[in-house]
Image 1 (cartoon, rainbow, N blue to C red):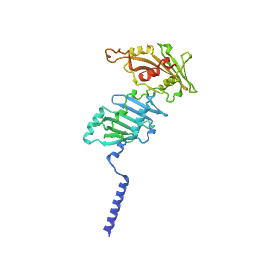
Image 2 (tube, one colour):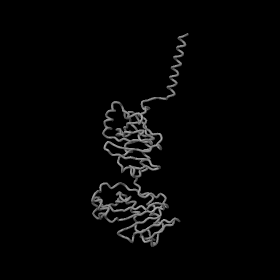
Image 3 (spheres, rainbow, N blue to C red):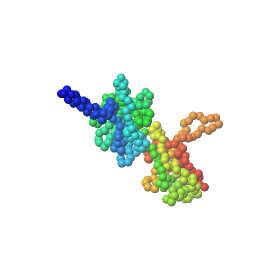
Image 4 (cartoon, helix red, strand yellow):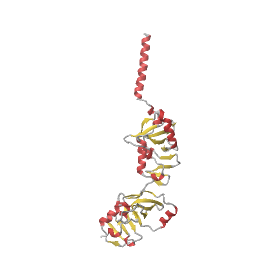
Length: 337
């Protein structure tokens, strides 16, 4: 009798343990805290600090509804969106085999970047050490460090659900890559009160387009004298201001060359005045043609047919595309009937 009671109690205990294990779900090495890379609530992220082994770093901080780079510059929203989506959707694709761990960690020690993720505190809640891509470029080696648990001693192969590719390119440490490249943003052209286009070498071709509050568009010279306006062409000229970006910073031109360019008379000057806010001024210079020799019966162009130099925000020298500036710098005669 006692044996039966003992057997019953044993079976009852084992059944209880089995039930408890079943309710806890499967446990694997991937469920441990130091493989918990994802950030469930990206709206709570207040700062992203990225730095690499070469000493480059960017500091991105949320201020209200915008993000600011290094406390001074607005950030490209599409890059921030990409970073936040990566925080949310990242997942472990596989652990790194034990036989490869040392090699992967040695490579990461010489070439990797750290992404520190803050949520209002002075210390990051999570830090990602992002290394190199896997051989097939379908994953990225990463190590997780958490505020309350320290740094993992095991790397993982990481990826995104529904995405095939590497993740290290999503977190550049070059500040230029994060800078907002917008020059003009008037998605609703009605927000633009007027545009002034100056042709310093041909003053008679300079003009002002006035975008009236009543929706009527008119053309004047710079003194305010009315010019006969082709309304369709004038309205079309304003459309170029809906979204105009620079292509890249001009970092190669320094010293005397830069000073010489900025002291030279611009080929064009653009002034855009919104209905609310300050006038934006952009100076434009042609770039010299640096292409190869043309065909025998074709004259060599004087200027680069694709790009121009532009001075924006008073001090920032950038390169812009002529497919946009050629529309914005049409002579007055092209808008007159």
